[in-house]
Length: 223
Image 1 (tube, helix red, strand yellow):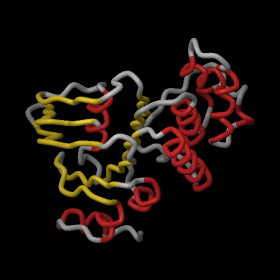
Image 2: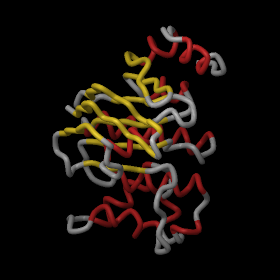
Image 3: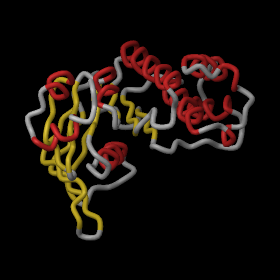
Image 4: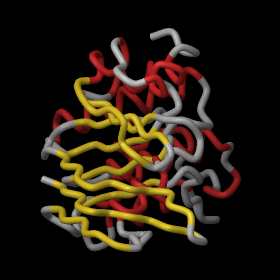
């Protein structure tokens, strides 16, 4: 269980996140949707601990066993294989596990390529491989397919679904695509101006929004 209580994030006197209470069930998949500036990235950073809230508390079980992937994932100058092996320091069969993770996202032929020379979509696939190279209890992913083409998006989505189902981890991701939220998430959270306006089963929220803000956001998408 992950709980967010009385969390407020202010920047320059402006409130960018205001969440009285939000709970995530262990082992479920959650999609965060909303316009730019709605608070999706801020919420993920607060959950990951890379941003401390102005006030409030975040509590999660297994606090050290999680992975966080920002919108612009880290791609170091050494090989793609080494980039993924970084997640497996001091673990047995490090190379084999890294190779399997890269194979899962369709990057078996990139082992020797330089991580900082990849395209944006390739870097995202490499970063996902780094996330899934070992078992984790929680994955926090910010727009994990924002730079990928259709094939890359399919590869990442299928990989994440398989990983979540096999590992039983909690998956929380942000996306601009309600269609992607429907494919990946069991529950959808709609954020608007830093507040949660809707939360519930993915199909229910996406096909029958209850607030005007959610309806206006979703009317531009065909689910």
